[in-house]
Each structure stands twice: as C-alpha cells, then as structure tokens.
Amino acid sequence: MSNSLPFNTSMIRGLFTPLSPEQEPDDTPGFWVVLQGSSLLLLAGAQEAQLPEGPLPTGVVPQAEPLRIGLWQGKPLRAVRIAPDATLPVEYEKLPFQGPDTQLDNTLATIAGRAAQILHWEHRSRFCSHCGGLLTRIPGGWGKRCRSCGDEHFPHIHPCIIVLVRRGTDLLLIRNAAWNPGRFSLVAGFLDFGESLEECVQREVREEAGIEVTNIRYVGSQCWPFPSQEMIGFLADYAGGEVRPDGVEVVEADWFPEDALPMSPGGKRSISRWILDTYGKSGDNR
Ligand SMILES: [Zn+2]
Image 1 (cartoon, rainbow, N blue to C red):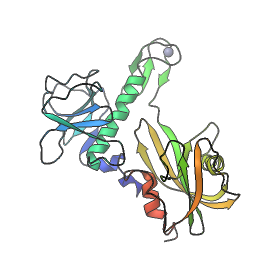
Image 2: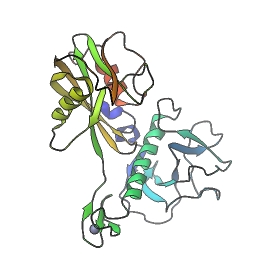
Image 3: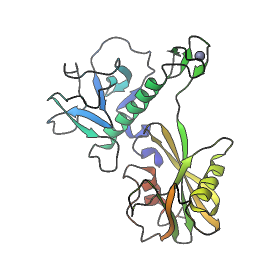
Image 4: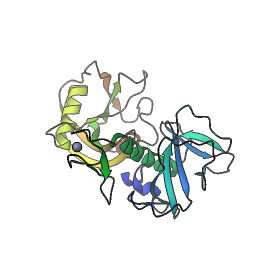
C-alpha cells in the first residue's frame, strides 16, 4: 500500500493527531518541530532521534509565531522555522528531512515534512492574491478569508502524475536535464488545465519521451511536501512511437530491461522507488 510511504499520514498514525490551528487552548508545554532550511532540529546526544520538548532554548529565535499543528504523543506539537544561517544552541543538532540519503527515521521525516508544508502555506497566505487585503483564518481548517473582498483561499496542493511505462519486459526511464548523468527516473509532471489524470499521463509521456501509452491504471499516491505536491502514481503500457526525449527538460529517455535498471532512481522515500520496487519486476499481474 502506498499509504505506508513516508510523508503520508499513515506513517505517523498513533503518534500524531492533527488539529485545526485555532484549537490552541493554552500554553501547555509540548514538542517542537524546529526547521532550518530542509533540516529538522533534534536533541543533541540522544541515543534515539528526539524532538525537543518543553521551553525552547533562548538561542532559538523563530521567524514567526509558533503554530500548533496537532498533538505528538498526546502533547501539543508546535512548528517554527529559524533563519537558515542561525547558529544552533549546543542542545541541538540537525538532520535533513529531504533528500535520498537522510538518516532521519521515516516518522520524524514525515512530521517534519508536514510541518514544512503547513509553514509554507502559512507564509504564502498572508495576503489576498485577488485584492492584496489581509487574510484571516477560516475556523476548522487551514483555509483563509480576505478581510477586504471576502475571497476564500485554501491550501495549494499541486497534483503531479508519475508513471511507470512498460513494453514487454522493458521499462521506460528518463533523465531530467537537472540530474547527474547515470541517474534515471520515471516520467512525471504537473496536471494542466482541462486534464483528467489519465490525460496528464498521456501528455507527459508524449512530451518527455515521444511515445503513446494505453491501459493507464492508478497504483498509489504520496504527499511530497517539497514544497506542496501530491504525487499520483500510475502504470501504463506502451502503445506506439519511437522513444525520443524532448532535449530540453529531458535529455535522455530509453527502455531498460526490468532486471538491469540503471542507478536506482529517486530517493528511498519516494513513490518512484516504491513503484519500481513493487511493479518493476512483475508488473501488476501478480
Ligand atoms: Zn481580497
């Protein structure tokens, strides 16, 4: 099940209870998600990675008011960002929660990602994109309403398809222009105006690799909080055309035998790796 992927809520079930932001009852102490860039601050020297608890050390200067995002192990969990160049107090160390090689365990990476996504939205939703007025919170969730024109704004979560295309025992992989030579992954891209998800799959494969696909089927999805995507995973079968990268966004595209793939694509936490591990060898005819 893709539910069990990092950054999806199931990963922190039993540890985290989401609460709407206005449910800040008092100043009961609790845990902290303190983010610096794409790293999470942890207690230094602890045997197991631990979120800070209790008052923040005086050396930690949040960039905005702490925001309570829920309960962690039954206690209030508050999220803040500190400046990218701030010096960490000796009580803390930090580990990246983004990137393929992070040592952070999946539950802490997931709560860090959740906090990062919420703080990104909070930072980007201070003013109305229609009239420039100040936004206030709509009770019960993360939505905002404009004090001037009344427009309502809700968290921006961007749907993005990702697809494993198969031709017999060969799989289609592409190399984005931004990736190092030798690193390949699945075709992926953002949903466009007027598209179903299946139409988006067809267009992205056509644009990035020059071929047509058929028999498109959904296999799972993953929250990807960098900063706010929802990755929606599909399988598809080759239907025609010669593989031809667009030469701009995609510099290489080719068929690879399912048992001899190039350098493992994507990070170990990503849905691209999960799709390849789950469906790469045997497809979905198991
Ligand atoms: Zn407005």
